[in-house]
Image (cartoon, rainbow, N blue to C red; front, side):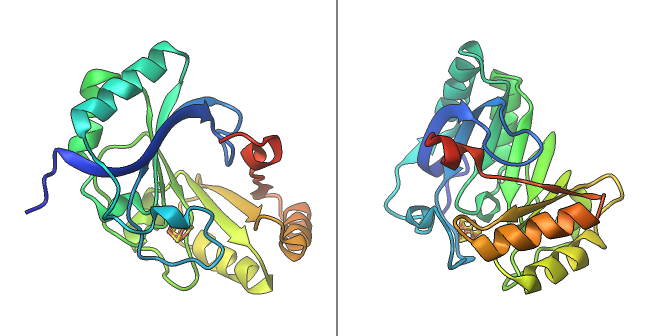
Length: 205
Ligand code: SF4
């Protein structure tokens, strides 16, 4: 039986958010283990197995978030892996009770939404499209671009999001084709913005 009071964790760290609407802000990251989505370009493949990573008590994660808040973090990012492979309700409850920072989620949207979040980043994948509830709940839609088919996919995803959802195209890392396509699309479509992985440019986590 799964212990909802413990979660498999790849790492926790305090850094700057590198991508998306909140890029450049101080944040505490909780990277949960486990992902079955299997993106070929994934830069966190070490997070795919849920086994083999230490299981952390959610109270300890909340304590670590509180320490990061004391050290300047302005929000908590729950990422992965695919964090929604887990029931996130106990963790977000513990974080709300212990540290009170805004809670952000980064997800591919393949699982039901669980937990309470102030900001949801949906990064959908063509080979495993997201659930409708995530398309409608997300605050930002961030599509990684490697080829022209990703631009079409981004438009199809955006058509199912709310009007207020921020629309972001993010070139795949070291994909010159993705860069050209994303820049060109954003230049010609005012409702889209470019997202860059600034942490990778800076060489920080
Ligand atoms: S969903 Fe995220 S963690 Fe999972 S394979 Fe794709 S990029 Fe990697």
